[in-house]
Image 1 (cartoon, helix red, strand yellow):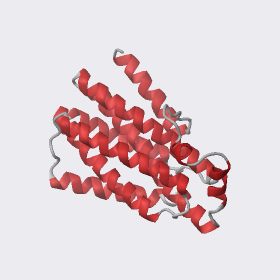
Image 2 (tube, helix red, strand yellow; image 1 turned 45 degrees about the vertical axis):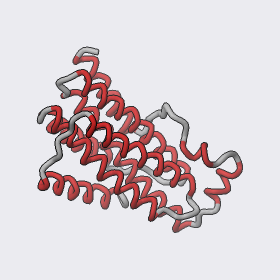
Image 3 (cartoon, helix red, strand yellow; image 1 turned 90 degrees about the horizontal axis):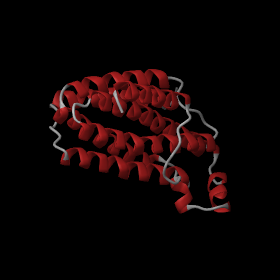
Image 4 (cartoon, helix red, strand yellow; image 1 turned 90 degrees about the vertical axis):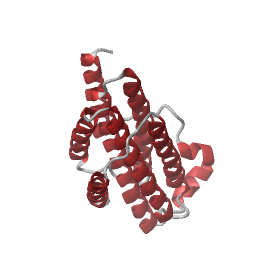
Length: 216
């Protein structure tokens, strides 16, 4: 694709991410662990507080996937090599699966995405553009740090999700595995570790986002 084509694809991805119309290329994770009536019974077993907690946590995870779409699309647009561009695009496809899964789970729980998704997307896209302009090794280093932080965040959600919410847990577990793989792929491709102050700023920004998205 030429530059215009890539821009149009990026715009389409942005609209899908913000409007809530993502489509997964891989099977929905709960389908692999629960089937038919067992799946329905799993949700019916959740009491109101458990359902609300699961909804809030999945909303945070959905916001994370909106941001991931923006980050990877921006870094793909600014990539200086075709190899790096393809790596970013492949990671974005995995994140599209995550986006679709978290959307579906929110609907099942009777909850909604964050009302601030356009803001989250715009901010993450800007950060991705900056990361991409810093060069290939720095861009990959940004991927490593982002994915490692997300992996830790998802591990925390596995601890907080209700034990009976097997559907949400199956989604989060698969997402966690994928994020870890993205970090390893970026390391193997030549990522340079980010300076400690940058990592700290990224953690602080993520904290603001996750805390706000829990409620809004």
